[in-house]
Image (cartoon, rainbow over all chains, first blue to last red; front, side):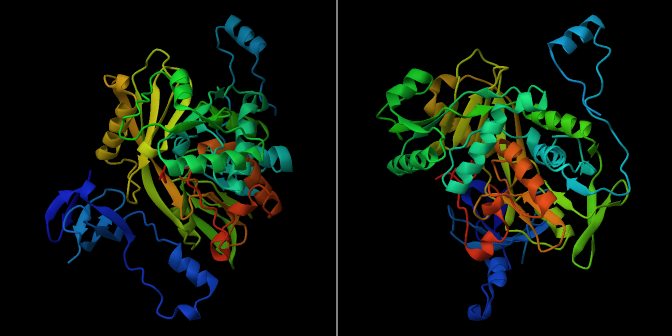
Length: 82
Length: 418
């Protein structure tokens, strides 16, 4: 069970949150210019790292804030991203 | 060298000799400097691939590299369910083929994999699921896979444990009966394939972790391992829970996320359940093993992790719904709990495919459903490794489906219910 530090509510139980997957993925600025492979990279491919990952979390059963955390996917240790 | 055949006669002969004459089931060779093909991952999929490479394609100069021990990854962490009640035509064809291979596996491998054809009941508690079941039964009829809709009373007759109270929160509206489904001994599947592959000349190398993939101008030349470099012109990746990590060694990114999926077993009970019981709406499924333990699976955890452990609240949820469904299990104690890391693809169908790197092939992304696929996956992957082209059964599961928009969106896994 993770204790997740919500920037607004403080440490809260994992069950109140939904993982929003990897952060730092941005919709391409010029979608018309992309070929199929670039779309695959954006839509489907993930870094899926073993170790540190920056990811979105949603405090959906709390203050409903979206925020970014850094978590280690091996130890589940969480670092708050300022 | 043929493996010495196991039979009633070998059992008697060895019993008379105080069981001191049993030969090792497979060798423990030192890695050679080069092979015709290397398979990364000594679980069911990797070992089956090696076996079918030797049997169907005459390629036996093959090394299977396993970082731990045989079948110690997800082959040893699943809930041993074998079934073919999928949604899409390619999946139904593929998994039904695998299921049929399981039925004859013990004979084929001369190794008792304890396949036990139990049949599976899926409880239907929503109208959407009932429509889905009708559609699925018709799709499955197209490949002669049996899947029929039964009444709640029939469920009660077959599984008296289940409460079919019409005033329950989610009353059971109907159920489906999948008579072909079964369970098997997971270790035996890995061991059976290992023994026959070894007998055909395949080198199975345990405690040998791959740390890098050597490339030369866009094609693979071999691997770096903890036991030195090994060269091969063809490399098959058959790992679970680490597909992204291994693919990254060759500079590839995959449409895969790795999440924990937990399972647990109860104390051994007298026979109470002779079918596999699946309850998609409540996220729980269970079967009773030959030892009498109830083996129970639930939903996947909600975030990526390589920790091989999941959250307690996920199990709590599974247990709560289990008791709602079968109140008589209330006082049963749970013995063990564990988690496997499952590689979930975007459409939750596997990837059996060539890659942009010449000579590198993938057999990954099995999500929550790899065990049931082992024989068909090994057969198809061996075909791909040997010929460079996918067999018709595995062709829909290529990596190119993402660019071509041919997703095989599945809804039948433990990881994506409702």
